[in-house]
Each structure stands twice: as C-alpha cells, then as structure tokens.
Length: 198
Image 1 (spheres, one colour):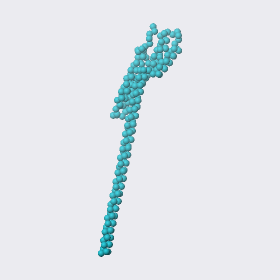
Image 2 (cartoon, helix red, strand yellow):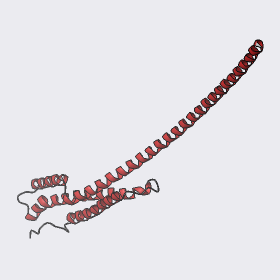
Image 3 (tube, rainbow, N blue to C red):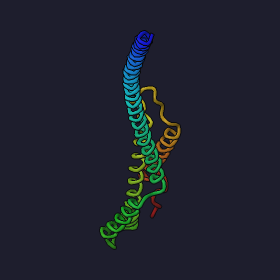
Image 4 (cartoon, helix red, strand yellow):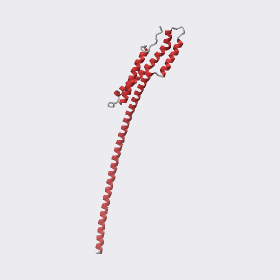
C-alpha cells in the first residue's frame, strides 16, 4: 500500500504538475496576446495623435493667414480714413510748402510790381500749393479706401470682410471725395479765391 500511495502521490503530483504547466502556458499566451493588443492600441493612438496634430497645425495656419489678411485690411482702412482727415485739415507738408512759395514769391516780386501781381505771387501761389497737397492726400485716401473695399473680390471666396473694416474704408473714401472736391475748388479759386485788387 505504501508503494501504491507513492505511485498515486506521484501520479497526482504529475497531474498537478501538468495542470500547473498548462496554467503557466495559458497565462503566458494571454500575456503575449495582451502585449500585442497593447502595442496595436498604442500604434493606433499614435496615428490618431499625429492626425490630430496635423489638423491642428493646418487649422492654425489657416487662422493665422485669415488674421493676417484681416489685420492688413483693417490697417489700410484706418490709413485711408487718416489720409482723408489730413486732406481736410492740412498737414505740416502743406504748411512748409506754402511758406516756401510765399518766400519765393517775395523774392521774385519787385517793389515796383502791381498790387495784383504781388498778391498773386506772395499769397496766390502758396494757396494753390496748399490746395494741391491737400488734393494729393485726398486722392491717396480715395485710392486706399477703394482698394480695401474691393480686396475681398480677389481673395478667397466665402470669407466676408469684417463690418468695421468696411465702415472705416467707406469713411476714408467719403473723406477722400470731399477733400478732393474742396482741393479742386480751392485750386481753381472757386472757393475762397484771391481778393480783388482793383
């Protein structure tokens, strides 16, 4: 009976050993499967992250381009309005040019010249120079404003221009037109012409 017990114990031990080996093998197989599945999942996550990064970069580039276009158009609209205001109020350029024309007129006019000639040379030319420079500022305001207003027609379709840019550009165009009309009227003596000396 002792031998049988040993054999049975050995058999039982062998059976248990086989079961343990099978358990170990199954566990190893499951672990390997988990490793493969984890590796595939990490690869899929990495690809998704790369795609998301690419979309984000493209989106940032598009947004940056749109912002740059909007900033440029807004700045040009403000410049147009500023030039229109300068054309109406005058600038240091026109002041210096008018003073120069006054000096040149004084140097050219002799003391024996008629009063009408002296007035024209000393004051008339300076007045015309001021009107001319104001007209140039008005024309610049008009051109810049029109360029800003027509710019969306040559840009990407479906991207409307900001309302404030249109408003400021229209203000620049309006001021430019008014300044140009006044400059022509001043230059041609239709508005505030030289006084009569007769």
